[in-house]
Image (tube, rainbow, N blue to C red; front, side, top):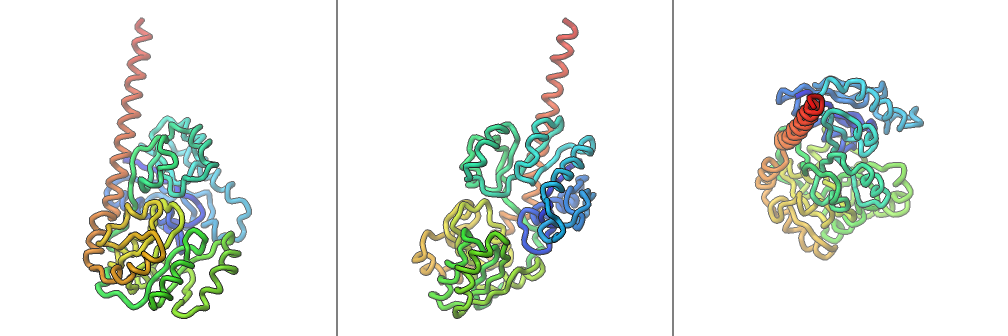
Length: 359
């Protein structure tokens, strides 16, 4: 198939540091190319891909200090997609709802994967107006606030099997990897580590909007015993950071749409101790890849059990459920189904038109 992948411009594809959406787009794009599809990736100019790369001549916007208006480049990105529509069998968007007005009027198949939270009241009018836009969720929990939307499938994220090395022996520290923000609850992770008496390593980025929260709430906690703040790390560094941990702490306090770091840890053989929220119960196989808890007392009780889980079973469960091959296969099934549907509609419209002409 001729497939267009449209990524956001905030990070390169793949991202240099943090960037879950762009990372997933990269894995999907490269696997589709490997499987023999002709893929065009619309992304920032500093992206690296085996597909054809089309860009509005901008580097990743989060790290671009000269960019004052990020929306302007995304409008240019959509125009580049429109100029190439005749080249594709399907267009796959990953830019939230930004493209909805043009997608509603496209004559070729298109699909949108939503990567973020959907429980915000401001989103209801958008998805009500564009209720016919075909959508893909990244977990069943993600779609619950908008159950009436035009959902085509749930496709869990997947990783290349050789991306993370299996670490048969974990180290002697707990890991926290992600953003420092109120909903990620690093404060919980620090308390769990200190009460359990196990060192905690924190690899996290701090967005500008979360800087006040970091300064007032988190920074004082980092001075405590057993806590080491590593800062934001690259993709290459994540392998050892996660693989050498005895467990990953995922103490969220929000409806997590997916939680890519959970399967990254599983790929290393590192089990996950997570708070219940959003996709967490769908991603973790209880007693195999980790434990899901509802409170701090449950978390403290489960630390030892999590660390003692079989790392080889954890890795095997990752391979079974979260490979990039499975993710790409699931998406191609949706692509083909939508393409057949559009072709059938065109055929029926043509037949109806011919019948009216004969009359």
